[in-house]
Image (tube, rainbow, N blue to C red; front, side, top):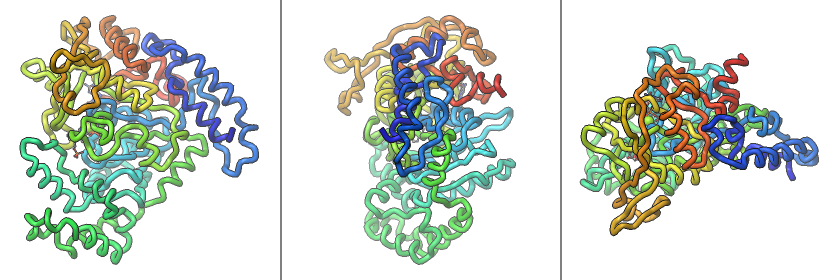
Length: 510
Ligand code: GDP
Ligand code: IMO
Ligand code: MG
């Protein structure tokens, strides 16, 4: 077996390190030891398996059974976005050598709260606050260069060193006409609109697929840039007719504006695939930071009420230029309840006072658009589906603190459809999905404030039971629990503590 393959399988155990944990939460999945043992065996034969292969074998740290290593970790949203990915990425980035955004664009809004400072990042990876961590905007991301340069300016203004940023030369650019088309498309749909962020994401990915896209590298060559803009505009004449007189559509204006961005971005543009592989080959830790969430995935989400990229873990490979075997762990970030921005089915949605209360307590207003988020109970049918399509190896459950003070908490374990139909699994049919409602198990709530809790064992019994129920139902251990917006307001479970050398274990060792 080639060394690379053997190594990858070491890390690729679906249960991986997380299931080794002794914690109650971590113990959710049985059979872990067995998988780990197989990994150990594979791991121990690595040096000999590697001989005779031309590719330089990866110097990876000891096998996964020790649950100390995870060179390639993908972090994805496992609901409808805004789960707290920015915070978790920032935490993992402390011990990572690189953080790579692999899809989406500035439809994302990732929040990091550090002391009194709040950072809202849209394009720049959430590792940027760590000076020595390489931050990559991968080829799968769509880049609005105005937003990117503004974000860079703002970070510099706040004395954040941004020199570690690199942008893939192959990433596609959001152009002014993409934003116009996004607006126009939504307006045309009227009541049926998706509720996009109107950042031009869909039209940009559409151009990419139609091979009419303009890439970051095109900013470095005026002639090519102009030619490509002409080619991209041509088939859009009809749909852009309402904007015919808009100065933002003038060829010369766009070219000049984008050349200026190119000039400002030039030092950051790089062959990011090579940079990522250099780190992986050296056994370093690379965090792949997803945007949006599984249920907004264009293939697997609640189509057409989705975004135009694939926020699932598999897309990390495509959007960063690595293979599936470079991924060792997949963390799904979730909220302890549910939220959604924009239109589309949301089977556990709440309304009235209860919804308002959760929204206010959780500060559920969009990071990018400021829109009030729809809120609901946690949906374990959807979450189990998300665990499946992402191969989740661990969960990070954020915002548990928001649920303090409710007598009872509802947990959706099944859907009921029209005419009494019942669904244990996430329905594939759009019509069905629009008509199902949640069926719930009632769990006792807790009244204690959780924001000061740092140990799993100090959580109220009802909170631990709530987490245990989620973990058992989904079949994925919990590595991290969020109890407040601040970066220190987390609980590392035993399962999570050893992973990526982060959290308690690392702090203790440091
Ligand atoms: P992302 O898009 O997944 O990065 O999430 P957002 O940043 O859009 O939204 C998550 C919001 O929840 C942000 O305002 C975070 O500061 C906040 N947050 C993250 N974790 C916690 C937590 O454990 N408790 C509370 N109360 N807020 C949190
Ligand atoms: P983060 O990374 C929540 C939603 C929009 C809309 C749909 C399509 O912060 O979790 P788009 O502009 O992508 O064409 O809109 O997707 N959406 C998000 N919802 N969090 C996000 O990102 C989102 N990015 C897009 O509200 O319903
Ligand atoms: Mg967000």
